[in-house]
Image 1 (tube, rainbow, N blue to C red):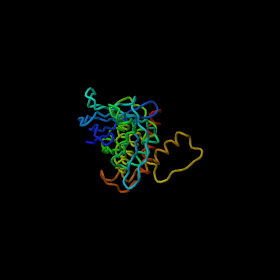
Image 2 (cartoon, rainbow, N blue to C red; image 1 turned 45 degrees about the vertical axis):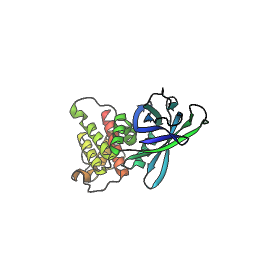
Image 3 (cartoon, rainbow, N blue to C red; image 1 turned 120 degrees about the vertical axis):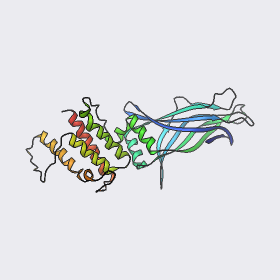
Image 4 (spheres, one colour; image 1 turned 90 degrees about the horizontal axis):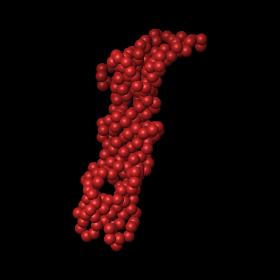
Amino acid sequence: MITLAVNGNLAATLQRITIGLREVLGAHELRLQLSIGKVPIKTKARWLKLESARLHVEIQGGGPHLLGLARPDTAVILSQAPESPFPQEVELMLPLFGGQLRAIEALRNDGDLTLRIRLIGSCGSDDGEEPRGPYAEEVRHTVARSDWIAELTTSGASNVVLFEVGLPAFAGSADAQQPYAMLRQAQQHYLNGRYGDAVGKCRLVLEKLGVKSPGLTVALDTSMPQPDRMILFAQVLRHTTHDPHHARPGADQHDFTPAEARMIVQMTAVYAGYCATL
């Protein structure tokens, strides 16, 4: 539990911090939810007006990276006055665009997400004897990796983070939908840092989509029809997944880098989307 002080005097307690994501038009929104409790009055009732929160992403061994300024719909006044309702649930919102989500994932580096939260506003005493002044309080909050991945998935932000364009919704039989379900599994492997498993799952996706091995040699013919070129693209993509497909689960024969795995999963997603239009 974190205490919030006004002019050196305890005024409230920050009992819980919750981080969520939701989809909005053309972007996503980070929701910072604060559960605030009252501290009994010792000398006089004090208040603080919470107007915004400046958020930074922290990483091990490096300085904080500014994410943006989260704001409530309206400024929230927290008072120790007896008639003031407590506990209070306060929500601040920060729009996040694709580039920011991808930067967060790069900084998170498959681990937990740690945020430095600087609450900003003004404060004073109810009787007016203490002059109104600026208020600032800094706290840190860590979102467990599993919780953050769940938020990415349920909000649809994982499409932006990894695929950069969302996959279309696929109808049809369970068998027809199977490649796209496996693609989601590849995505989850990638987000959890299991890069070889992600690439191996991509091979299964390509096989389900009917992609065959390119053979020992590939003839690069400039007169090749475009549909044949698309097939060749998929065959070469399948070839890049060969090693991990034959590895036992959880063990790589080739240590794929995050960039390599990201490219293969992205390209598999692009090809799956293309197949859905045929």
